[in-house]
Image 1 (spheres, rainbow, N blue to C red):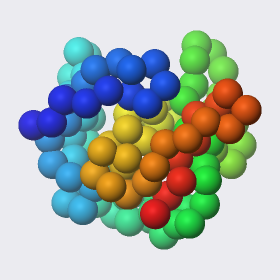
Image 2 (image 1 turned 120 degrees about the vertical axis):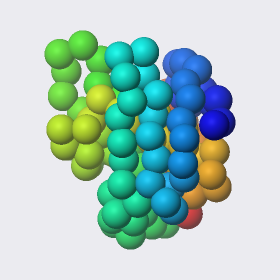
Image 3 (image 1 turned 180 degrees about the horizontal axis):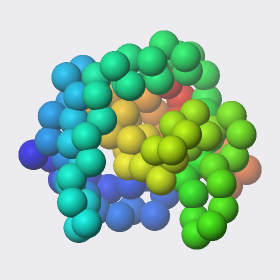
Length: 105
């Protein structure tokens, strides 16, 4: 089970599985499952594009067109999913005007 950090705030977390097979992120409040199908759709839609991570903070909604916005009701997990994509080689992290983005491979 890898232990990695989010890309912007560097919060440490564990996950089990992979983007290709589906995975579970381990949170203090309990595990959350993400299917391989979710990742397949995410990668197909964003391939070759730089996408704002768009993690939500407090009561704010994720920005339109961001990874968090694309995730809809899962937007609160955008920072963790972005870190996993980079960790597994599906994207690279960069900052544009101080905002975290991933370039999806």
